[in-house]
Image (cartoon, rainbow, N blue to C red; front, side):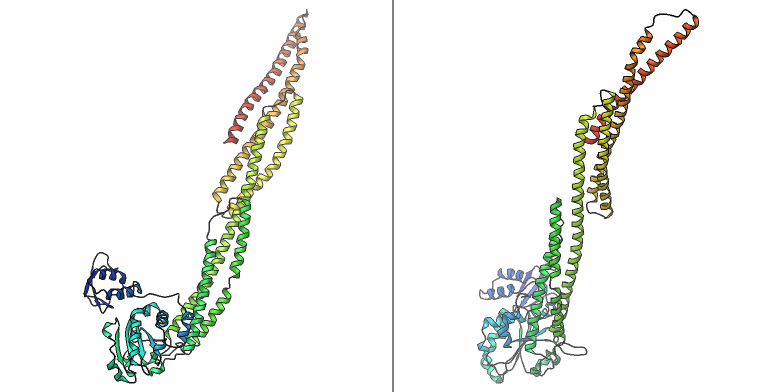
Length: 542
C-alpha cells in the first residue's frame, strides 16, 4: 500500500511512502527507514483512503501515542506509581542492549500471567519504556518473553498489549519456547497482525540477537541484575530529580523577580524595595542546595557502587544505570550554577537599587534647592526695584541685602554638596547618568543666575548709596552756591575783579561736576535696574 505524503524534510516535494504491516515505513526510492515524519499527517492521509473501518481506530491510537519521531515520552510517571506490580518483577529492564544497540525489555518466566490486571501491565510497560534514553529508544526495543513454565495461550494477550499500548518502537519480540513446545500448535497468535517482528527462539537462539554479555544469568548470560536494587536506585533517582526540579523552579522564579528592571519613583518606595531585596537574599541563602547536593552525591555513590554498574574493562553492565550518572551530575551542576547566577543577579540588582535610592535622595535634595531658589526669586524680585529714597535708607537696604546674601551663601554650601554628590554618582557609572547630568546642570544654571542677580543688586545698592550721598551733598550746597552767586557788589579794582571771575568760574565747575557725578550715577542705576530685572526674569524662568 503506497501513499504520497508531505514530509518535514522538504516542504516543496512529495515522497513515496510505503506502509508495511502498519509499522515499517520506508522510502520507495532508496529503501532507507523513514524516521523523521509526522505520524499524525500519515493518519490524515490514510483517513482519505478506503481502509476498513475497524483498522482506522487502531492506527489512530498508535499515531496518538507517537510523536514526530514515533516516540511519546511519559516523563511524569514515577516508579512509586507502579511500585506494586514493579516489585512483582512482571517485566524489567536489565540495562542490556541488543546487537543493534537497542534496549532489552524482559518478561521473565512466571506461571500466573492471568492474575496481572491488563491496566496495571499497560502502566508498567509505559513506565519501563521511558527509562532508556530517547536516542537508544529510537533503535527499537528487543522484547524477550520467557514462556518457560507458562501456558502458551497467555502470550497472545501480552503481545496484544504491546501492540496497542507500547509507547515506543519494538524492533522484535523474542518468545522463548515453552516447556511443552507442542502447545504452540493449538495457539495461533497471528504474528502477521503485529507491527513488530515475532520470533520463537530457544535460550541458545537469543544470542543471535543479544550478546551473552547483555543477557542476565537466567538466559545463560553474564549481565548482573538485582531487581530490588534497581527499584531502590530508580525511586531514589526520581525523588532526587523531582526535588531538584522543584528547587530549580523556585530558583527560576527568584531569577524572574531579580530580572525586573523597574525602579520606584520616590525615596520611600526605594527604601521599601531595598528591604524587600534584602529579604529575597535570605530566600536564596535558605535554598537547601547543600542538602540536595548531599542527596545527589549519595545517589551517585549508590549508582556507581552497584554490582550492575559498568566498571572499567568490564564488557557488561547496566547501561541505563550508567545513563543516570550524567543526569544526576547535570542536575547538580544546574543547581549550583543557578544559585551562583542568582547570587550574581542579586548583587547586580542590589547595586542598582542602591543607585536608585541615591538617585531619589539626590532628586529630593535638588528639588528642595529648586523650590528654595524659586521661592526666594519671587521675594527677591518683589523688592529688587526698591533702592532707597535717601542715603540712610539705601544704607539700610544695603545692610539687609548683605545679610540676605550671606544666608544665600549658606544655601550655596548645600548646593555645592549636591553637585559633589552628582559627580560621585556619575563617577560610579550610575545607570541614570544622563538624568543626573541634566538635574545638576539645571541646578547649577539656576543658582548661577540667582547668584549673579545677588551680585548685581549689591552693585546697585552700592551705587544707590553713593547717588543719594552725592545728591544730598549737592542739595546741601545749593543754598551756599545760590548765596555765592547772589552777590551783586562788584570789586572796583581790576585784580579783584579778575579774582572774583576766577572764583565764580571755579564755583560753576564745582556745581557742574557735582551735578554730573550725581546724574551719571542715576543713569547707571536706571540702566542696570532695568537690565538686571530683565536678565533675572528670563534667566530664572528659562
